[in-house]
Image (cartoon, rainbow, N blue to C red; front, side, top):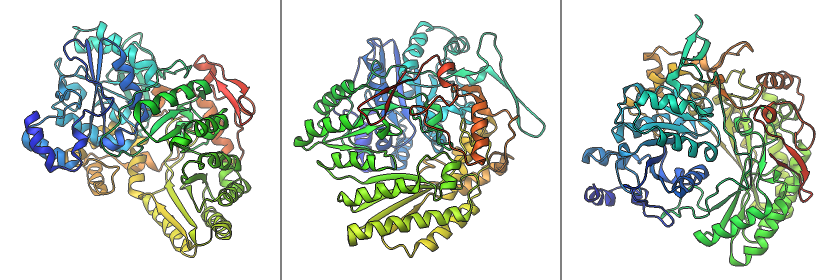
Length: 620
């Protein structure tokens, strides 16, 4: 295969995607490893190598003396075509062994539009795509990641889902796999299903009502849980973190050192799935992060370090951490990136610390144009917060900002769209007064998808035609705002995302047929084929409107109810009800427990304590 690759690689785009051998990559002895796993990311190398979770698991598994973990990514279509023509199966980068030679193929499911890539990679590897068709000689196909909080659309293709934090669960999973070596596939899967956080779909029977809604999902074997509880890393200071991450040969999407300062978010935005499935908030200590930063920069040579979390400015020691990083490494030309900022002047104060080394774009997410709608979605910021932040940014020398909004939210009207335009006009006036002709305001407008395990899971989604109408309105009215650039997410992509995010096992034949018709890289504009998806839905007699446009009853059983995030469904119902009353829910780290149920159900306690005066620290 190596000779064939040498002939192929000069003829494809970015051959470094397929060579391996990067700095800090790990090649372990194949024969001495007792469990061999390949981490499979169903997107192109540059996207997969930017994924922090993959970096964590790569180092974690390879530190174990008996385990081996290698990587594989979805080949770009030019490379796939040549691989198929030459008979080269999907292979792992480290050893270049075929993926089908491993014990476990573990897919990271980060977004719903990667589903056809999963099937395409299995097919390219020579592994049957349907779980029931795999033999004793085939590897186990496993999946983890945020999309697995509704695993059902992919359930017939995946042998095992791992639910929750991989650092907590994956080592136990591999240990049980090693203990079960030699068992028949069915017995092996049953043994794995006994681990908390492991979901084996074939052991759960599905019943539907006559109207197509779900009646029940029940385990077919005694002793298996009725619901699979997510696993949780309780102490991030004690959790594994990679201090020698791989440094790619080519630019990747996020090509920098990464510090995960905290996990989870207490802001409780009602549209945000990550905010519910990653609760409770857990922080790393300042001393741990300082040590990790030193090691990462020493071991990689990066000149930029990103502080990662769902809401980095909420980290209780954020100001002290930023000050330390700038003072310690700024003279060496090392910049600090803050990918997520609150809409307030405090965030700009942080950014001012960062800009001492390198100026970066400031990004704020008001999400909605009116206070009424921000109350509906529990986005606890007001217009004065945004204006103060923008004024502080322009006064500090920034000539541009990026703003995120979302359309199609529950109860939204055209008055709310006018609110977006009015906010942009005010931001523009402030910017013109301070930045003059240098002013640049980039606006990203996404489309709402009601996600599983959120207070809005009972809400319908708006249609592509409605989305296009709202996009057209904003484009037309926004033309008068010179210096403001509007970017819109594709309506058809939102349509497919909504189907998959809210779907059940009846979508599996649709996904399979779309794959056989050539669908792949559905998240990439140049390859997305909504016409094919529409055709295969019709051929499989699956009505997309059933998943997208129904307003759900509180009595309805959801496909994702099989997964227990620790969140009380009653709390989600209450949040949904009070959203219609435009009532906000407080931040549980600043205020009081909101009764979401996560802490007691997962056996943890959220401790509120002062950090450096920026925000209270939350430690589990």
